[in-house]
Length: 280
Ligand SMILES: [Zn+2]
Image (tube, rainbow, N blue to C red; front, top):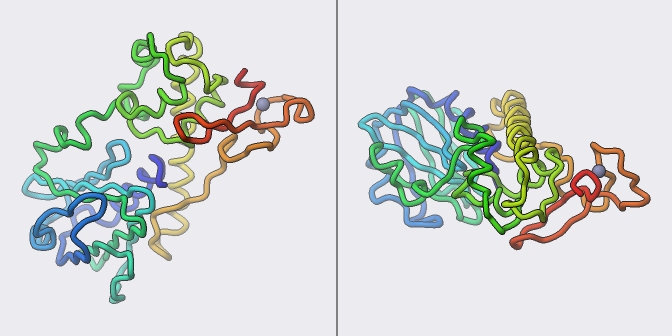
């Protein structure tokens, strides 16, 4: 599933090619993804110019002229693939294909179809039903230690599940919740409301660190690969604890023979990976 850093990479890759470009054509090959696609989408896009591309949580906001926004979400398996001088017919899962006056083609490919696409007036975007309840951006100025401490106060759910609550912080998925808690040295089972100010003081920079480093690694993937195969999804990134069950802890001096290394538990139906020593 594309997580926030991957979506940020996609936005940067799209912006590089599409800012200022005009849709010359759009192909729509089905009526719906996770939700119905906008009515008359190809006709409404044709001739429109792209003015800005931004990310909100894991949503991609493509601002068009005439104050409309094309809202995209990659869901579980969505990818946006950029190509140039592309005459290939649409592939089986290319549900939307956009053509631009600079020769670029963008395919929205989504085998599992949990992605979404909407076209809304710019003035309504903050009130959009999928966006209006989203919390602060994890890499934005709204996420401060004092603010998060106030949000967590009295919360009886685990810190791991609180980090994944999109109404508090929007865009932290399972992988980065595990990684941030590891770097902050906080046990994922701890109740959010019992975290000390000192712990939250470590957690906020840990969130920034794990997301920024993944965005940077996505950026390097972009430089290396986007020109050749156009695939903006799926980049390799190395994690400290995520998916490392029973492997030695990378960052602390815990004794693997005694601890057995990184543990996996299930919280809220998702796997959590942590070091029982560093995150005691
Ligand atoms: Zn450790």
